[in-house]
Image 1 (tube, rainbow, N blue to C red):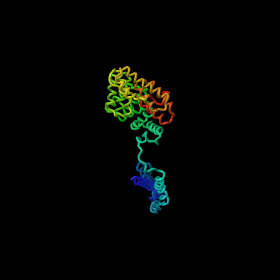
Image 2 (image 1 turned 90 degrees about the horizontal axis):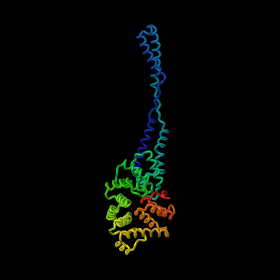
Image 3 (image 1 turned 60 degrees about the vertical axis):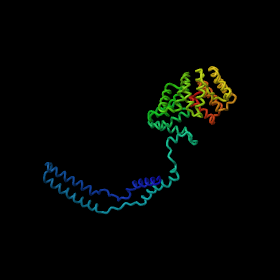
Image 4 (image 1 turned 180 degrees about the vertical axis):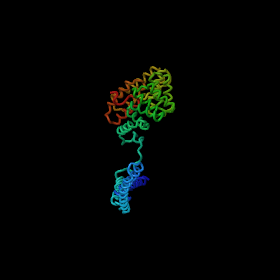
Length: 384
């Protein structure tokens, strides 16, 4: 189908351009024809002058006779010119050369220089972050350039939104989310990403504006895990354990148990329960973690003792990482623990130390930076 359409278009364009070469040459009007028109016009003017009395009758008769003689001569010459056969104009060489240039050359070169077998590549596919051969910075720059010329392209903003979030460009993510929602409408996913971007801009604090975005996302989709997580995090940051505990408990109940946010939810739930002074606190996600006997002992502890145990395990993880800083997963757990405990300064300090522990460009460094962005700790250059 592609080749049929391509050759059909080439043939139509070539025919439209070369068609004038197939006709006969039209001879230009002769001088005699022009003279005949002039003399005819003079006779008409002479008659009008005579009718108005602007010229004496004897002068009018003489002038009419002279103009009539010239008119008859011009008409005779024009007739002989029209009866002469016009030569046919058939420059076959020019026609053949034009056809080859317009049709033959593109048809011969496209299979070598073109890519007719390549599939379509829409914007969504070009912005797929999981393609190993993709230059994200180049794609983002091109998409941004297009949006500068077409700021009402809602799909373009919608495609850039997750890219900005995953690369830690929170301020641009807020702009992209705002435009995408305005142009394409509000969805649970867009509202949740807007709230997450606002949280990152605020240094990890779930602001009032972010709360509204997460609440809208949860209203549009009650199963949105991101919105539910950040709303629970806001309750912990606001030191509202009575409301935070059931919020975290609901996240734990919904699961799935292997979800990446579950470890944070367990630690936050444990902290909220400890502040309330009751309930069973799940073990916090630190490494090295408590033994089963420690967990059993923690169930019988007083709330203050249980909270002290949680913070002691986090402190132990921090001490261990000082002597063994090449544990990327340990740094992630430490940053997450501090964030859940509301200690943003310590979380940022852990992030800085983790980045210093791994060389720029390594997989561990990239994983730590991506994880820090999900906690709202800002882009890599904002904390140093």
